[in-house]
Picture: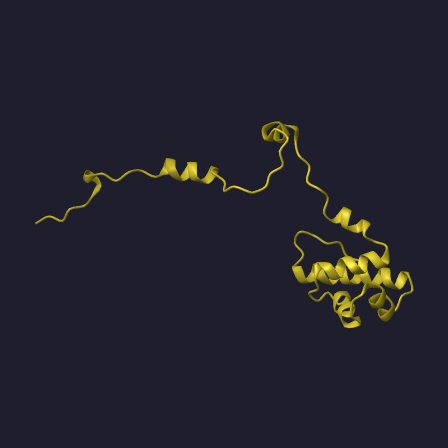
Length: 125
């Protein structure tokens, strides 16, 4: 099996996930029909997921639940860590929205200069 890398395309990642689901299904000696029935999805949906075709996150969760691999989701997307400095700055509150960065604005403001009357070109008559 291949590793999923940052340079992998979305299609390659979906195909690898499908290969892994298929490997777990075969390891547990389940047919497409068996796993699909237990997961409450259609057989064709399972076949598409194993082929790496676009399937929903809900479908993946149902499949992983039947295969006893929901633990893979914990490894897949762990809760973000908060640094002590961020925690102190937030006074223990959790963020509810993101803000636009002001770093780029400060740089743009400093490079911008105002245009005065002396800077305008006036055609000579």
